[in-house]
Image (cartoon, rainbow, N blue to C red; front, side, top):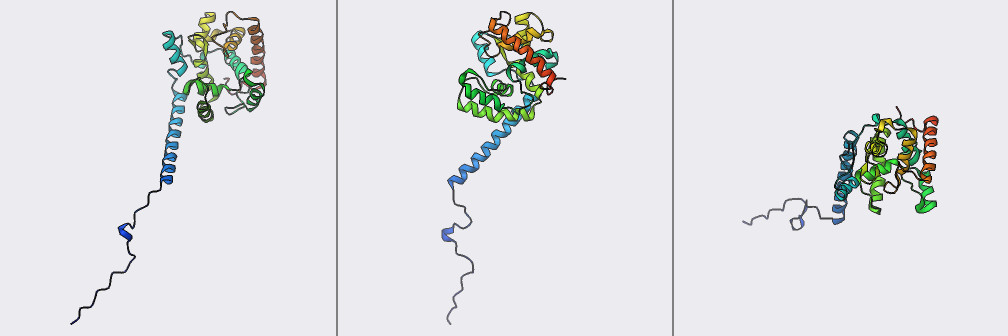
Amino acid sequence: MAVKARKPARGKKRPNGTKGQRSFRPLAFVRRWLWRTALGLGLLAVLAVLAFRVFNPPTTHTIWTEARRLGGVDRTWVNIENVAPVMVRSVVAAEDANFCAHWGFDMDAIRAAIEEGANRGGSTISQQVVKNVYLWQARSYIRKAMEALLTPLVEALWPKRRILEVYLNVAEFDEGVFGIDAAARHYFGVGPEALSDRQAALLASVLPSPKKREANRPTSTMNRRAATIMDGAALIAQDGRAACFQD
Protein backbone atom coordinates (compact mmCIF):
# COMPACT_ATOMS: atom_id res chain seq x y z
CA MET A 1 0.00 0.00 0.00
CA ALA A 2 1.34 3.40 -0.99
CA VAL A 3 2.24 5.76 1.84
CA LYS A 4 0.59 9.13 1.54
CA ALA A 5 3.06 12.01 1.66
CA ARG A 6 2.61 14.36 4.62
CA LYS A 7 1.80 17.92 3.69
CA PRO A 8 4.28 20.54 4.94
CA ALA A 9 3.05 22.67 7.81
CA ARG A 10 1.45 25.90 6.78
CA GLY A 11 3.26 29.12 7.39
CA LYS A 12 5.79 31.35 5.78
CA LYS A 13 9.04 29.85 4.91
CA ARG A 14 11.98 31.27 6.86
CA PRO A 15 14.59 32.45 4.44
CA ASN A 16 17.85 30.97 5.62
CA GLY A 17 16.58 30.94 9.20
CA THR A 18 16.75 34.74 9.55
CA LYS A 19 13.12 35.52 10.37
CA GLY A 20 12.73 37.78 13.42
CA GLN A 21 16.26 39.18 13.25
CA ARG A 22 16.62 42.91 12.62
CA SER A 23 19.06 44.04 10.04
CA PHE A 24 21.81 46.35 11.35
CA ARG A 25 21.31 49.94 10.25
CA PRO A 26 24.43 52.05 10.99
CA LEU A 27 22.73 55.44 10.60
CA ALA A 28 19.92 54.54 12.98
CA PHE A 29 22.46 53.21 15.48
CA VAL A 30 24.49 56.44 15.30
CA ARG A 31 21.39 58.63 15.63
CA ARG A 32 20.21 56.64 18.63
CA TRP A 33 23.53 56.97 20.46
CA LEU A 34 23.89 60.64 19.58
CA TRP A 35 20.47 61.25 21.04
CA ARG A 36 21.33 59.34 24.20
CA THR A 37 24.63 61.19 24.52
CA ALA A 38 22.89 64.55 24.12
CA LEU A 39 20.35 63.63 26.78
CA GLY A 40 23.13 62.51 29.12
CA LEU A 41 25.13 65.71 28.62
CA GLY A 42 21.99 67.79 29.07
CA LEU A 43 21.25 66.06 32.36
CA LEU A 44 24.82 66.61 33.55
CA ALA A 45 24.56 70.30 32.65
CA VAL A 46 21.32 70.68 34.61
CA LEU A 47 22.82 68.94 37.64
CA ALA A 48 25.97 71.09 37.46
CA VAL A 49 23.94 74.28 37.29
CA LEU A 50 21.63 73.19 40.12
CA ALA A 51 24.63 72.25 42.27
CA PHE A 52 26.11 75.76 42.19
CA ARG A 53 22.74 77.30 42.87
CA VAL A 54 23.09 75.76 46.35
CA PHE A 55 26.83 75.24 46.83
CA ASN A 56 29.50 77.88 46.30
CA PRO A 57 31.96 77.11 43.48
CA PRO A 58 35.21 76.10 45.23
CA THR A 59 37.35 77.46 42.40
CA THR A 60 37.32 78.32 38.70
CA HIS A 61 39.65 77.55 35.84
CA THR A 62 41.10 81.08 36.02
CA ILE A 63 41.56 81.02 39.80
CA TRP A 64 43.17 77.58 39.61
CA THR A 65 45.61 78.54 36.85
CA GLU A 66 46.53 81.82 38.55
CA ALA A 67 47.06 80.02 41.86
CA ARG A 68 49.47 77.64 40.15
CA ARG A 69 51.29 80.47 38.39
CA LEU A 70 51.55 82.76 41.42
CA GLY A 71 51.82 80.16 44.14
CA GLY A 72 48.45 81.17 45.60
CA VAL A 73 45.68 83.74 45.34
CA ASP A 74 43.80 86.04 47.72
CA ARG A 75 40.14 85.04 47.87
CA THR A 76 37.46 84.69 50.55
CA TRP A 77 33.83 83.93 49.78
CA VAL A 78 31.31 86.43 51.10
CA ASN A 79 27.52 86.23 50.95
CA ILE A 80 25.83 88.99 49.01
CA GLU A 81 24.02 90.11 52.17
CA ASN A 82 27.44 91.18 53.49
CA VAL A 83 28.27 93.30 50.44
CA ALA A 84 27.33 96.98 50.35
CA PRO A 85 24.25 97.30 48.08
CA VAL A 86 25.96 100.13 46.21
CA MET A 87 28.74 97.73 45.23
CA VAL A 88 26.23 95.34 43.68
CA ARG A 89 24.51 98.19 41.83
CA SER A 90 27.87 99.57 40.67
CA VAL A 91 28.86 96.26 39.10
CA VAL A 92 25.54 96.04 37.28
CA ALA A 93 25.76 99.67 36.15
CA ALA A 94 29.31 99.09 34.87
CA GLU A 95 28.94 95.67 33.27
CA ASP A 96 25.29 95.01 32.47
CA ALA A 97 22.80 97.81 33.09
CA ASN A 98 19.91 95.76 31.65
CA PHE A 99 20.70 92.76 33.87
CA CYS A 100 17.17 92.55 35.28
CA ALA A 101 15.52 92.81 31.86
CA HIS A 102 17.27 90.10 29.84
CA TRP A 103 17.30 86.28 29.94
CA GLY A 104 21.07 85.96 29.66
CA PHE A 105 21.81 87.80 26.42
CA ASP A 106 21.49 91.55 25.88
CA MET A 107 20.72 91.72 22.18
CA ASP A 108 21.14 95.50 22.02
CA ALA A 109 24.62 95.22 23.57
CA ILE A 110 25.53 92.39 21.20
CA ARG A 111 24.48 94.44 18.16
CA ALA A 112 26.45 97.42 19.46
CA ALA A 113 29.49 95.21 20.03
CA ILE A 114 29.29 93.90 16.46
CA GLU A 115 29.03 97.42 15.07
CA GLU A 116 31.96 98.71 17.14
CA GLY A 117 34.14 95.64 16.68
CA ALA A 118 36.67 94.64 19.33
CA ASN A 119 36.47 97.98 21.13
CA ARG A 120 33.35 96.96 23.01
CA GLY A 121 32.24 93.80 24.78
CA GLY A 122 28.71 92.44 24.55
CA SER A 123 28.80 89.82 27.29
CA THR A 124 26.27 90.03 30.09
CA ILE A 125 27.07 89.28 33.72
CA SER A 126 25.29 85.95 33.28
CA GLN A 127 27.56 85.02 30.36
CA GLN A 128 30.62 86.03 32.37
CA VAL A 129 29.50 83.82 35.27
CA VAL A 130 29.08 80.86 32.94
CA LYS A 131 32.49 81.49 31.38
CA ASN A 132 34.23 81.91 34.74
CA VAL A 133 32.54 79.09 36.65
CA TYR A 134 32.02 76.37 34.05
CA LEU A 135 34.33 77.14 31.14
CA TRP A 136 37.63 78.87 30.40
CA GLN A 137 38.86 82.29 29.23
CA ALA A 138 40.47 81.50 25.86
CA ARG A 139 38.27 82.43 22.93
CA SER A 140 37.05 79.62 20.71
CA TYR A 141 33.90 78.65 18.85
CA ILE A 142 33.49 75.62 21.11
CA ARG A 143 33.57 77.76 24.25
CA LYS A 144 31.17 80.27 22.75
CA ALA A 145 28.76 77.48 21.79
CA MET A 146 28.87 75.98 25.28
CA GLU A 147 28.42 79.44 26.79
CA ALA A 148 25.37 80.02 24.59
CA LEU A 149 23.82 76.76 25.80
CA LEU A 150 24.61 77.14 29.50
CA THR A 151 23.70 80.81 29.93
CA PRO A 152 19.90 80.40 29.50
CA LEU A 153 20.08 77.37 31.80
CA VAL A 154 21.74 79.42 34.54
CA GLU A 155 19.18 82.18 34.03
CA ALA A 156 16.35 79.66 34.32
CA LEU A 157 17.65 77.84 37.40
CA TRP A 158 19.38 80.58 39.42
CA PRO A 159 17.79 83.72 40.88
CA LYS A 160 19.29 86.94 39.56
CA ARG A 161 20.64 87.71 43.02
CA ARG A 162 22.53 84.39 43.06
CA ILE A 163 24.09 85.16 39.67
CA LEU A 164 25.44 88.42 41.05
CA GLU A 165 26.63 86.78 44.26
CA VAL A 166 28.68 84.23 42.33
CA TYR A 167 29.99 86.89 39.95
CA LEU A 168 31.19 89.12 42.79
CA ASN A 169 33.03 86.18 44.35
CA VAL A 170 34.84 84.88 41.26
CA ALA A 171 35.67 88.12 39.42
CA GLU A 172 39.33 89.12 39.23
CA PHE A 173 40.13 92.60 40.61
CA ASP A 174 43.93 92.51 40.52
CA GLU A 175 46.66 89.99 39.87
CA GLY A 176 45.92 87.15 42.27
CA VAL A 177 43.00 89.01 43.89
CA PHE A 178 39.63 87.36 43.34
CA GLY A 179 36.26 88.26 44.77
CA ILE A 180 34.86 91.40 46.31
CA ASP A 181 35.96 90.60 49.87
CA ALA A 182 39.62 90.28 48.91
CA ALA A 183 39.37 93.29 46.58
CA ALA A 184 37.86 95.64 49.18
CA ARG A 185 40.51 94.76 51.74
CA HIS A 186 43.34 94.77 49.17
CA TYR A 187 42.60 98.23 47.77
CA PHE A 188 40.88 100.10 50.60
CA GLY A 189 41.47 98.13 53.80
CA VAL A 190 37.77 97.70 54.54
CA GLY A 191 35.28 94.87 54.34
CA PRO A 192 32.91 94.69 51.37
CA GLU A 193 30.01 95.80 53.57
CA ALA A 194 31.72 99.15 54.30
CA LEU A 195 32.51 100.27 50.75
CA SER A 196 31.53 103.82 49.88
CA ASP A 197 29.85 104.85 46.63
CA ARG A 198 33.14 106.01 45.12
CA GLN A 199 35.10 102.97 46.28
CA ALA A 200 32.46 100.69 44.81
CA ALA A 201 32.57 102.58 41.51
CA LEU A 202 36.37 102.41 41.38
CA LEU A 203 36.32 98.66 42.02
CA ALA A 204 33.74 98.19 39.27
CA SER A 205 35.88 100.26 36.91
CA VAL A 206 38.82 97.85 37.10
CA LEU A 207 36.82 94.78 36.04
CA PRO A 208 37.45 94.97 32.28
CA SER A 209 41.25 95.06 32.81
CA PRO A 210 42.07 93.95 36.38
CA LYS A 211 45.77 93.44 35.69
CA LYS A 212 46.20 96.93 34.20
CA ARG A 213 44.09 99.08 36.54
CA GLU A 214 44.35 99.80 40.26
CA ALA A 215 41.30 100.98 42.16
CA ASN A 216 43.34 102.83 44.78
CA ARG A 217 45.50 104.60 42.16
CA PRO A 218 42.96 105.70 39.54
CA THR A 219 43.98 107.40 36.36
CA SER A 220 42.02 110.36 35.00
CA THR A 221 40.22 107.94 32.68
CA MET A 222 39.29 105.72 35.63
CA ASN A 223 38.06 108.73 37.61
CA ARG A 224 35.76 109.69 34.76
CA ARG A 225 34.60 106.11 34.42
CA ALA A 226 33.95 105.87 38.17
CA ALA A 227 31.87 109.04 38.08
CA THR A 228 29.77 107.56 35.28
CA ILE A 229 29.34 104.32 37.25
CA MET A 230 28.25 106.23 40.35
CA ASP A 231 25.58 108.02 38.32
CA GLY A 232 24.51 104.74 36.73
CA ALA A 233 24.26 102.95 40.08
CA ALA A 234 22.05 105.72 41.43
CA LEU A 235 19.90 105.72 38.29
CA ILE A 236 19.17 101.99 38.22
CA ALA A 237 18.17 102.19 41.90
CA GLN A 238 15.59 104.85 40.98
CA ASP A 239 14.19 103.53 37.72
CA GLY A 240 13.61 99.93 38.81
CA ARG A 241 16.45 98.24 36.92
CA ALA A 242 17.87 96.97 40.22
CA ALA A 243 14.59 95.47 41.44
CA CYS A 244 15.49 91.86 40.61
CA PHE A 245 18.46 91.71 42.98
CA GLN A 246 17.83 94.28 45.70
CA ASP A 247 16.24 93.28 48.98
